[in-house]
Length: 81
View 1 (cartoon, rainbow, N blue to C red):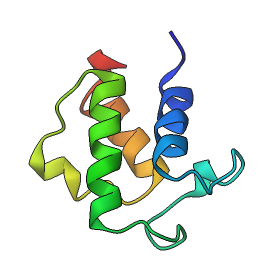
View 2 (cartoon, rainbow, N blue to C red; view 1 turned 60 degrees about the horizontal axis):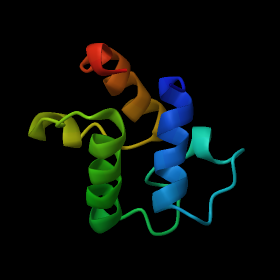
View 3 (cartoon, rainbow, N blue to C red; view 1 turned 180 degrees about the vertical axis):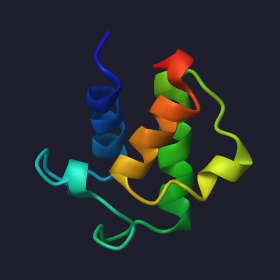
View 4 (cartoon, helix red, strand yellow; view 1 turned 90 degrees about the vertical axis):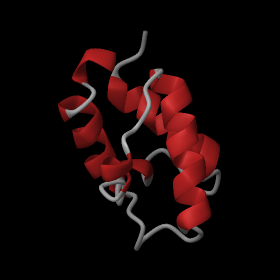
């Protein structure tokens, strides 16, 4: 199975098809066109499927960038990665 960063990159690619591989690690809500509440929900759903987790509601607010999501996956959901 691929490492968590690679798997998260695939999730971002699925939701934000306009991002190339080099842009994904720097992706934030402020820098990605179209990253709105609907995109956040879609990304959350894709991540939950990919990592076989259920993201807690308090963690959703932390989903503001690729790195913040990766940190959350490593920290709160480490057993799932």
